Image 1: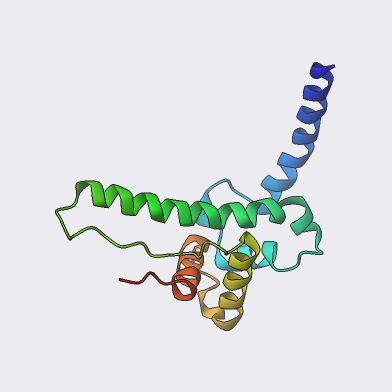
Image 2: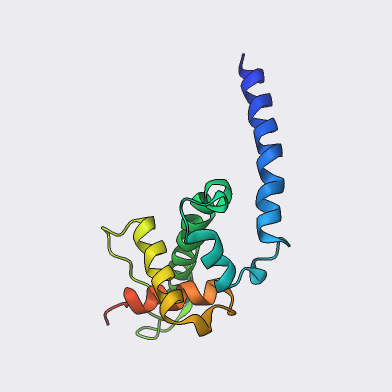
Length: 135
C-alpha cells in the first residue's frame, strides 16, 4: 500500500518537475529576474501560478529572508563587539507569505526599471524598504 503511494508521488513529481523547469529555463537562480518573478507571481489565477508560482514565490522570498538572517548571525559570530551587520529585512511577526509577495509585486509595478535585475536583488530591496530594521 505504501509503495503504491510512493510510486504515485514519484509519477506526479515526474510530471511537475519538467513543467517547473520549463517555467524557469535554466536551473541557475541568477537568471530569475524581477521581470520573471513578476510574471510567475502576479496572476494567482494563471496556470503558471497554479503549477509553480504558489510554491516558488513564497519559498523564494522566505529563503532570501532566512539567508539574510543567517548572514547577520554569521557576521555577528565573527565580528568584533559592536561591528556586526544589522539585518536588511525585519519582517513583522504577523506578516504572511502573501503579504511579502504583494509588497514585492507593488515594488516591481512602482519601479519597473528594477525588473531586469536579479530577483534576489529586487526582493531584498522591496522588503528592505517595506520592512526596514530599526537600529
